[in-house]
Image (cartoon, rainbow, N blue to C red; front, top):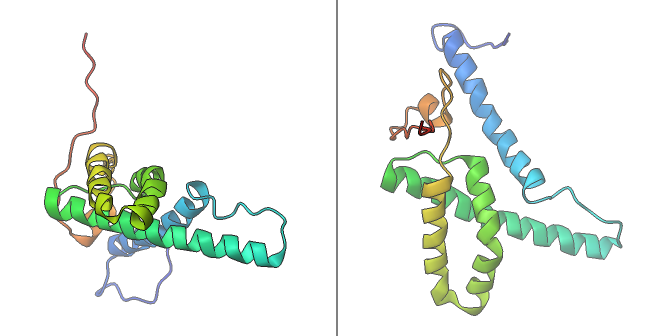
Length: 155
């Protein structure tokens, strides 16, 4: 049950439900920060060291989020594919040390590594579509290609 002060002429009950589902996108971001990037893992240290670790993790999240959102944006724009937030976060997490190192030491290599990340996203990072369940792009009316995720087994 959802309670809202929006009149039914403005949004139907179904639309209220769909918009509420969009709220979960924020939860997914926090979930990736915690489960993939371990933002919650803190050892007992002096406050100065804690602050350095926190700032370092926040910089890591900023860099990772920028790459993640760009990869998802490129997937929809160039390939008309919807990429999963969690899957793309995991892929970016795998590459983030290399990307950071290249940004500092070998900026000319960064583009090639970003291309590798994108190829991996297109290959392994697409959103699974559940029957009768709308995705964020479905709710927002974004057009994209749906790739069948059914696995066929040989007899």
